[in-house]
Length: 140
Ligand SMILES: [Zn+2]
Image 1 (spheres, rainbow, N blue to C red):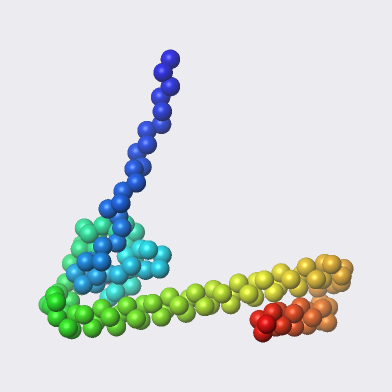
Image 2: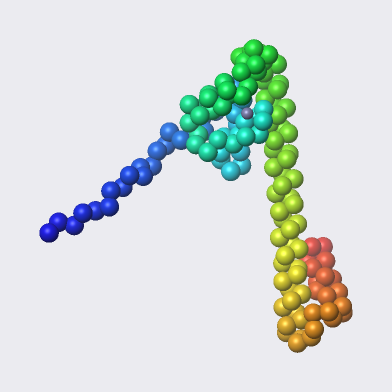
């Protein structure tokens, strides 16, 4: 009896990587999540395929092809400006995420402290202690 192997339909396809040429062509750049992101409307395309980006650009931003001609300084500047905007937004998001993480960590430590000391959660002194510990850590 022959054992039938499950067919490996998912083959690694290296063609789905972002091609730098698409940036001046279709106003797409690579986001930090490695997904192509539209510089005009910030939409992301799930699969980095030329066809997908081309279709998005032609369907949604056809006028940009005329208003920002290929190879013009206008187009280069627009892309540069939009990229800067996009990446500063992403940095803000990362920063907020870090702060949130620190907050979660602090509140976890408070509950841990309270649990250790077997004190009710309303014990203001212990909460203060934990916050100053957090403060010391962030200073040091
Ligand atoms: Zn778009």
